[in-house]
Image (spheres, rainbow, N blue to C red):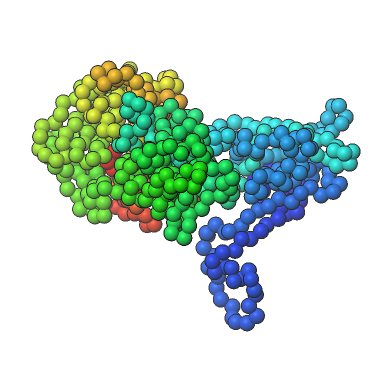
Length: 614
């Protein structure tokens, strides 16, 4: 209930009177809401830390409230579960209430907005009051619901006047919503919208095998998140991703007029009525539209979605898609077919272990027979080929995992004098292309090899300046890349958008619009993709110790995502399939695994460079 509000200035003891709490009881608690037992003994209560079914509603301004109470009440009302912020508008003048747009943006402050009483002053015109809001800004959620990390100081002014001669009201409110980080985490929910990668056919339509790309946004957690997510999906991709994805929904497609809420039926089937723009969609295109909805909504209901059905404006059925059909339409969405986890053993060979077993064996083919000593490796997502960096870091080798065929020749070489300045661990994207960074201080560059071979293409990285890339991991969809970028002795995580131009004979690949992937961390030692828009990172906050944490690709932190401690993590691997364990390399413990719900388990003392396919 406004727990993030500032600690100076306006008196905070009034907070308890500014909001009302409504408990929405469910399940076994329902009986407790209906009646109070009058007999029986005392029994222990399960105090598990599950999120309570609580909604917080603001109360309107009291008659005769002073300026400070109006400002306090308005800021508290922004942290409520009021669907349309109707109570917050009651703290505004009639003109301001009509003009104020809470959907324009949400500003997230570390500790909530402060209203410092020493900075409060009477309006120079003598007709009102000005209250200065301040705080440490960490992010902003824009009108597209996209989270944008923004670390800077925040300052805004709230102006009040008398309305009707008697009551104080705000006539100049802050832009959008302003609240603290913990209130934001309580009120908002991260959602991945899904679009098709824009590797498309000549007519602009997504190819049948085009991968799906997660587009992370935030919606209000307890204000019908399913309907919010559908509307956001139909509005199109966020600006950062728009250039590299496409959607088969016809332009102008919206929910049918009058549709207020969407929810699955008792068979977990969701019916989505669309407007006239979608009436003439052919079956194949409709199936792709349904797949986008299916994956977008999958985690927003307790039991998931079993089927999505799209309907025309007149109520007629357009198409329906179940789970099996959805998975078939998006081959990169599930990597549960990954049979092994891989690493480099103490003999510098590429070895593997079954995903649910600790038995270690060399991989078949030239990278596992010891013919070439390796320091790092990457395995293609089909698990039929692998790329390995030589033990001295100078050369990149590619070979089969299905036969003993000779190594494929590559033209990737590093001329750096020091071993640690040479080639990084490689990475395969979902298109079958191979990436590697040359860390040579005299010529640091990011290289791309079409289908893992041929002449390497130097990737243009916008905004890199004098920094060098120490590590590269490409997402399964192939349109986003995670980079560990070193500058001035510090290594940060950056997320970039991959853009492809040119022809097959003369391709051009670039990485643009680098954004911070873990802005809360001062130093990042290792990272890996761990889902559609999620990464696992090992790093340190300022003045802190190394920790393992899940982060979103937009830079936001996944709630409750801190993992069990592990000392000296130098490398980490994760699968997009959350059922598979994390694998890491620790300076003290060697190769270790973290099964879901368990603690780190040692595998072998010697070994480096753990990887999943990719």
